[in-house]
Image (cartoon, rainbow, N blue to C red):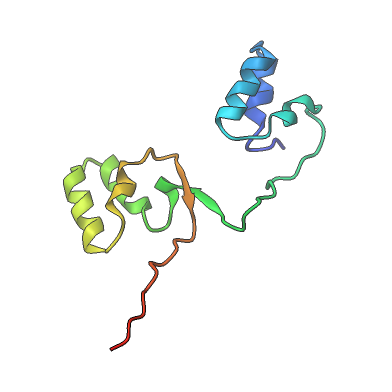
Length: 117
């Protein structure tokens, strides 16, 4: 089987796309460019090690926001979608992001300030 992140770059090379162009595309997608220098048969881990423990997901696939992107897809006006998001106390600006933009899977709860009575 092929690696889900890197297979398309090996295919780009195979069809004649210059190496520097493929590496530039990998850099644009924030992927490790050195992977393209490895032989296609070399085994690499499916998940890259993250410096942070934070897991990222495309905003359109995030459990909190996916249904709103689907609403847009089926033609619900954006102002209606934003109103629904506000009613559910969600960040309405998320619907303005490109669907593939990565956001943290775990939303950090807003910090609550403690004040004396």
